[in-house]
Amino acid sequence: MAKQIIPLMTRYQMGPFTLSHRVVLAPLGRQRSYDYMPQPHAILYYSQITSPGGLLISEATAISENGKAYTRASGIWTKEHVEAWKPVVSAVHDKGGIFFCQLWHPGRFSHFGVPVPSAIKTEEIPHLIADYRNAARNAIDAGFDGVEIHGAHGFLVDQFMKDSVNHRTDRYGGNLENRCRFALEVMEAVVDEIGAERVGMRLSPFSNFLDAYDSNPEALGVYMAEALNKFNIVYAHFVEARHEKGVAMDRSLLPMRKAFKNTFMVAGGYDRDEGNKAISSGKADLVAYGRFFISNPDLPKRFQLNAPLNAYDRSTFYTPDPVVGYTDYPFLEL
Ligand code: FNR
Image 1 (tube, rainbow, N blue to C red):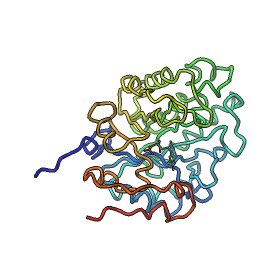
Image 2 (image 1 turned 30 degrees about the vertical axis):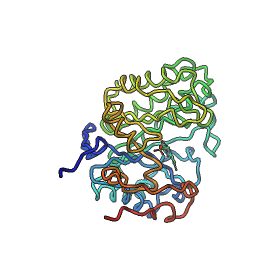
Image 3 (image 1 turned 180 degrees about the vertical axis):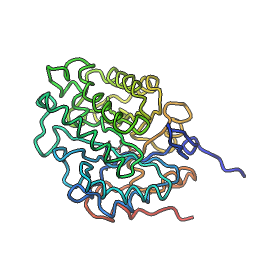
């Protein structure tokens, strides 16, 4: 009998990258780095998750010294970080994976007192943008295939966009165009540095993490999708509303899907059936999975075979152990 191909397991051409399926690793900070350096155990972790032609997005990776937030996160602002990432990226490439680095600045969430966007001085903004540019160059030097700008979940870029936390009165605050200016200036610099075909962006217009929410998230999402078209970046990655606390369940990413012309990725609460539906209905081109990948490094294979999934253990999501809850979930035995 011919093998039945499910929508999630169909090939997809994402700009220059040929993906053999649509099951993407969502960015997941696992807090197992030391001194902002990825450790050797990250090599095994990412390699376990890699499937030939599969797309992986790295954990949120800090772009600068003053962008430190969690003590066991990773960074990519120095040549030492580049060297530390190289074997991790190589391991993914050795197994045929495509690897994007998520570039992250926590903004007001940082331990180091970087203040809310309202308090960032206008003259500091070019330095922040230069930090993104430098981090993007470093990611490419480390061998990553591209970068994803973390514009979601209440961190720096999102703090500029959301009107609950951006109280600025200069050209980076006030109306939608002004609030999105920082995100788009970051994008302009990163695209200029490494090329649009290597750049994606993650956005969560509906989220209210870290108290960053917007009075008109649909307008924000569509504005960004249209603005990103002008850069011709390779993908837009939108987080669903339905799993954010206190936000209505019926909020849809469809207007953003319609507005964005290149690859559209969704994430948040997907299982096998919902992922297949999203692909077959045209709602998305790619589906990113977070928690299921944590407990099922061979997730695409399990989806293809409709095999049972290992349950994930939340208590080890962020613990420092280099093995337990990190690389010890069982693979399918066939
Ligand atoms: C996350 N998430 C996340 N998002 C992001 O943009 N950067 C990150 O570094 C992280 N880190 C992270 C760690 C852990 C342990 C979890 C569980 C989640 C959010 C993640 O990418 C994804 O959007 C959510 O997990 C929802 O997708 P699932 O898990 O329902 O497939």
